[in-house]
Image: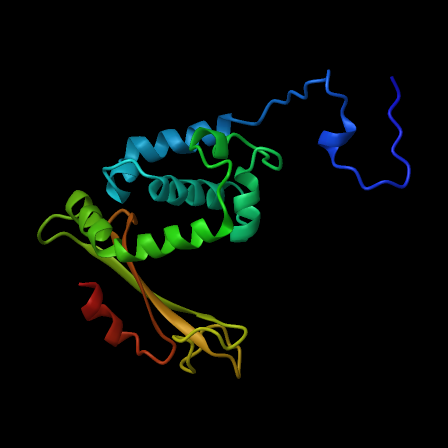
Length: 195
């Protein structure tokens, strides 16, 4: 059977005869490997011991960021049954996720950040252990970030606002805590909050 679509804007579902079934396989191995490692490391339970859609959205964003970093909109489309390129959305039951849900999950993550960091610290730090701490900055385009201010710019981008962030790790380099500061914060002023 030959199917010709000439000059018509027709969706693929409309173009396929009803007696045909479209079956496709989705790449799965890399998704299973990353989700398996997340479970083995205990990250899933550190994020939240309870199962929830927000937890699944956070886990999916972590996996998606590892595999192929994209915008939240593109990430969300990657979960969708019709536009997905792997099995992630199906495995975490996120095939109908909306972009706004990803942003809501990030807000939820921020609300729970201190609890999550405390769990990381209890798991990876012991009293008197060595910790590694570093501060860096990232310049910003636009004017929408309330933390974006002028300060010592490590990127050598004159005339750009920036944010400063500090990362606390255990002696093996495992991240324990991260905090974002306004762009004019001195490096020495960030350490007290992290400790």
